[in-house]
Amino acid sequence: MNIFSRESIVEKLASAEFDVLVIGGGVTGVGAALDAATRGLRVALIEANDFACGTSSRSSKLIHGGLRYLEQYDFKLVREALKERELMVGHTAPHLVSPVSFLFPLHEGLKERWYVGAGLALYDALRGKERILPAHRHISPRKMREVAPALRSDILKGGILYYDAQVDDARHTVTIARTAERYGALIANQVEAIALIREGGRVVGVKVCDRESGQEFEIKSATTVLAAGIWNSKIQEAAGVNHGYDIAMSKGVHIVLPKSAISLKTGVILKTALSVLFVIPWKEFWIVGTTDTPWIGSKEEPLANRADIDYIIEQANQVLRHPLKHTDVISVYAGIRPLVAPTEASSTTKISREHVVDHPLEGLISVAGGKYTTYRIMARDAIDAAASDLLRIVPESCTEEIALLGADGYSALLNRVEALAVANSLSREVITHLLSRYGSIFEEVLEPAKLDASLLEQIDPNLPYLRAEIHYAVTHEKALHVSDVLMRRTRIALEVSDRGVAAARVVAQVMAPILGWESARSDREISEYDALVAREFDSETLIVGAA
View 1 (cartoon, one colour):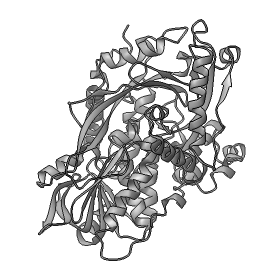
View 2 (cartoon, one colour):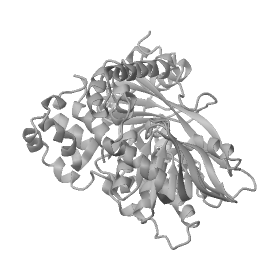
View 3 (tube, helix red, strand yellow):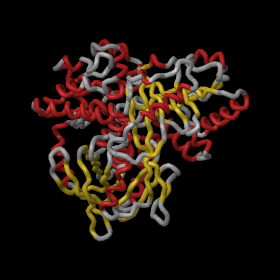
View 4 (spheres, helix red, strand yellow):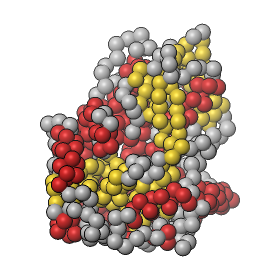
């Protein structure tokens, strides 16, 4: 679906009637749209900003069971998450979710090795019979020096290697949204929910505003699912609806480093006094984090500060032979975790310790909390609740069987990288990059380059992103602003030290003819992106690049 159909999408939102309207374009919201659409329901989804603009683009980028939950005896949650991990790696999203190894360093010898080893054995066992990822294995101090030369051998007594998986969270979220469209969902970003529409005690739709045109209209739907995370309460409170859970905001901060900063052949997980710290391989970079601190500031722009960065660097430096410095940091990003708990005497159904589904009125369901890995379960539970308000039999969820767009044929294409590189006059590295982002539909991205060879040029000479990806982000992925492309459709904002400021003009040049921008509009988009960077990145007291 391309940008030229946006007007018709808005018209359909205003004129059609739906079984389910989902509010929120994060991973849970798009997952709910996919779940409902594949059950044969008439579905619409609206997002006030851009898809994955909040927590769903600011995670640790891991698909994992959560080792720390084992210590809390939350075996159900771990089992659920591990099952989802295996499902994504093996079937639903193998092009987007890939295995990644982690080393758990040991400090105390045999006793700790036994204790941690038992925990990882349980971690492996909880994933069930279908096992895609390798099992954990113990490694000696000598082997550890080979695998992780950056770690201090004087304080470590070997380690245990285990596997989880990683994902580009924003790319994955957008792909789920596009898959929902393939199954009939009507999806629009930059459409904001203003007020719930009620008839008697039932919610029958939502009044909305198209933020691109300023037009206000109503969307009629038999049920409305709030999946806007930390924004759920704003919508409910404006309508005078008591929600059955409380949300506490916790800030998670990560730093991005060049691969040269740490000499490792694997990721590392470190247990800290407060939680755990991950050193995560990310293409040609390392992501290190995270923090877990209360946040009472802006919901739209959570910011890191010097204390966050100091904490991450200090924790990592406890085990590194060559300490990290602030000058090593390329970028920093912060996200908000919506931590939920049911209120007393509410209608909330506590699905697990991690997420809740609330059904305060007929026609209104909200879902919040949870973790990225279990988005599909959260979406299923929300649509189950919505289905109970529809006056007909609704099929069971089938998303366990639904492969995301680009998954089909991906493995076969991986075996043809050399031939694909020659056929498309691109390097092996760029083809691999495209396959890891678009899977088997990567040739759609390259199609416009047959008429305009400049689209095969890289946006930044140090990164593999092509101008064709900007074009595709607009025509197929609903990117409407320069920030959409630099922060979410690509991850350039995280991967260069100027946060994509230099690339903004190139991005605007490609977007302008597609969206009909005149030079003044392009200049405004670039200025707005510069200002966003100044607020969200440079003002992090980021001292990034400072001694």
